[in-house]
Image 1 (cartoon, rainbow, N blue to C red):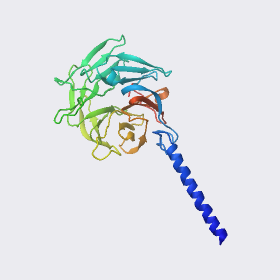
Image 2: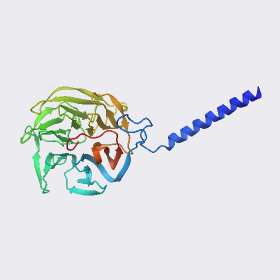
Image 3: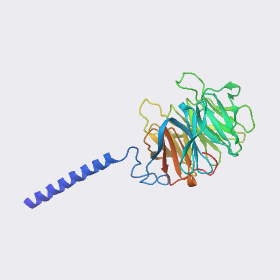
Image 4: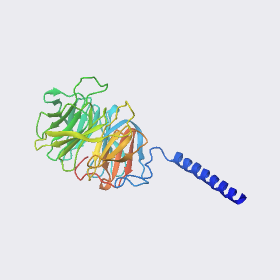
Length: 320
């Protein structure tokens, strides 16, 4: 009987010790660490988002270049930075009028969504800056936020307006056809449109909403207009009564969508099924693939720039 009691006591003590060890291990995990399960096909179980550099003010607008380098903006100090293939960060452009989103054209020119312009500008290879557009169908822009260039050279962009949100103030998702001087408003019914992207085949436009939890999809027509607006995905783990914080987004080569929100970078498959979340040390504002083989996901997150090695890879096209 005594041996039985001793064995039971030993078992209990071991269980308690293991439980405490497990708790210590949990507490010791680095902030923002990826869960032990990873995301199949996206990030390995041991992958974590690491800090590249901090000391910024509000990083945004990342876009990967053909050489594996990355451009990103720091909105509040009116600068655009360049992270070269060797890992060196330098100032690329100053006095940017609150540039947020950045895009690349097929000719290697950079486009900037200047929220303080308000306008979209183009930087030619010689460094000159010209205004591409500053109106929606004749109406002045509010504060353009994000943009992406399609295969024809047309530009989709969002214009949610500046903060604070003004009830009843219009918001826009617009399209500038290649060579046009006037844009087409494709949707003015999203509460606060922010990040946007195109699927790899260019046939579907995806737009998120900073206020709401619903991410929308549209069928892209031959002239750049869109039809069949529908819910694409529902963001997870948003506190009750809070804004989703949905901001920038990108797709990988399998059309999985990576969407920044208050709960981290949420990943969805091509049909909008939730796959998991990638955490970083600060709340992410935008994401883009860059680096060798486009297998590094960069996260612009407030005062810092983060990156995580991925199993997935970015799309073959230029930019996001």
